[in-house]
Length: 524
Image 1 (spheres, rainbow, N blue to C red):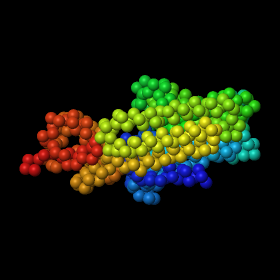
Image 2 (image 1 turned 120 degrees about the vertical axis):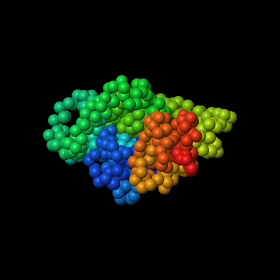
Image 3 (image 1 turned 45 degrees about the horizontal axis):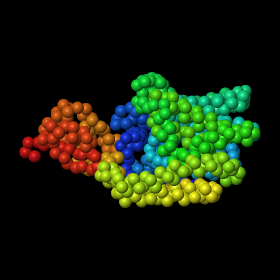
Image 4 (image 1 turned 90 degrees about the horizontal axis):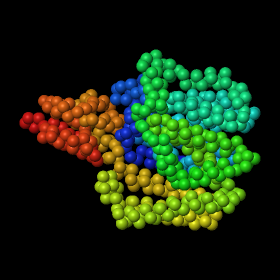
């Protein structure tokens, strides 16, 4: 019940605060909105064009929510919050079978209060659907492996979950669990166990769940198969011209930030699991270690990398840390006590030093661009310094129950500060909602919104219009020379780049770093 309450606060409270972000969130929400309006649930579309980058499962969930509750932020984000809650519950369920109830609670608490998991449980992205179904599939496999009486039911349900994962993110939804399960069975020297995994019926269930949509969209759009499987998946994984190229080590700092405030203890949790004797380590720790390592290495080897891609390893990392905290509370060795202090000490030292630095060297550029008040930064920095100092004292006194509680409370309160104070003022810079509503009133029904260089997806979500792009100054010049009244949306930097054309235009409205501009007609 405590876990549910924590998730309700962190995942659901203020879910409608803050407009849709322009980069990805509004794009996926607009795709779901298009499904509702067009009643085409087979071919996803964005801005009137086929959108083949992602399978439709999360779009379906968002579309159902939008149809039920209306076209607004809360409805669009509700499926992510429910999936995040479900993932925390599944992690607790798996932790009980691996380590027992206390460690399960601690594992789920770590997951629920990790920074990136909180954020991705509150925005419209596909990754949370993948994590939910992959975590469910791996949990059902582990239960089937451990419990003979539940084996058939667990495995058959697991194949359905794999189908959901493939509908959520494509082949990677199947590849990740298969690699983890395969490596686990190889480690256990038990590949013959595959014969007990209900493969014939499992394949039928998996195909029944995943294949119909892929068949339908391929029949309607013959180009889909080549684009999605060859270019979008295999191409982005292997190609040197991937969409998001990053170095191999890219996910190390991503983990440090994404698992905050627990990330300093992840190396200790991994070391603690490895150093246990074979009689103590158990299948649970082995499974979690393989799960964590497989996901991290798999996505690190890919050419295309984004911070959200490694979300599937968060449940495994949480299970490892839950086992660590359980050991510390019940039977810790001296080495583990020292490990916790040395792991936490850098954060406890850097937090007050960072506060002192900000006091003497305030980030004026940040506050000017984002409207974030310095008093908020001082408040958050002071609170972080106080919390880390208190938790360091608790760790030194070996009061680990209170220590874990203080870390979770710190994460929760810092996030709530960010949600209540910062998110509302960031809105104008991350979204075009306010300008979209203004522009919608200026334009004739059915007219498309015109953008210079960058289409802002939030304009499409908050209006029922399409977008047209002007790609260069020549196209912009022709557009503003129109004898009719026309409007164009700019980002501030793009507006400054066409200073030589400013005489023919005038600003109608500006919010944040976005502007609405109209043409100057003769006599106007």
